[in-house]
Length: 64
Image: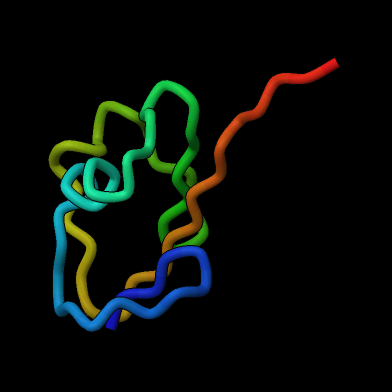
């Protein structure tokens, strides 16, 4: 099972870029932590989340 932002996915694996597209994330406005490490944006396309992985996705919001 894969956990993203505390939500458990009933999948054994999913490509990170596919998940981000499915959830309509704008990659230029997010950061992804995978298993405790910040993932470089250059690796979003090639990273496959697998059973046991834990990811956190945070969005940057402007304000003032």
